[in-house]
Length: 130
Image (cartoon, rainbow, N blue to C red; front, side, top):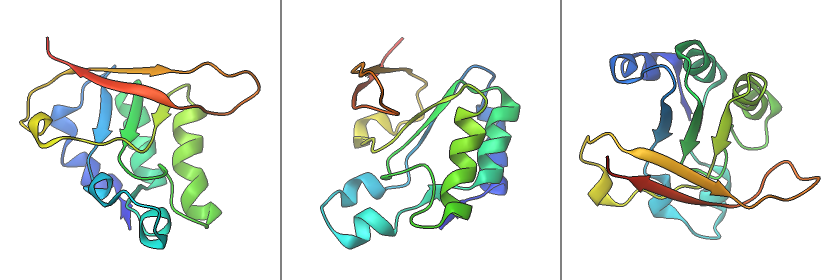
């Protein structure tokens, strides 16, 4: 199912301009090479992605396989177009240890491997205390 604009609007007071929004749906705990993990994940709806762009975020990360829904361009394309089309970055397949789910704001660092001619690459994702 999709994370809707209404879902994200409830969190708006905690989202500031230039923030990086990390979405912990719990899907990272299901990580496996299974049909369920690869096709039935929670994703960001296009309207919610547009709201994040309106809020001025720098990017968004999610613990699912993709930011957009599986096997349906009407669900897969809008969040990608909203974010990437507005110069925002996307990072997918994150994992959130319980220790970082304490409400403390942290600095997110996603250090990507640079590859020529590719639309994406793996990255080392880190949260730093400040």
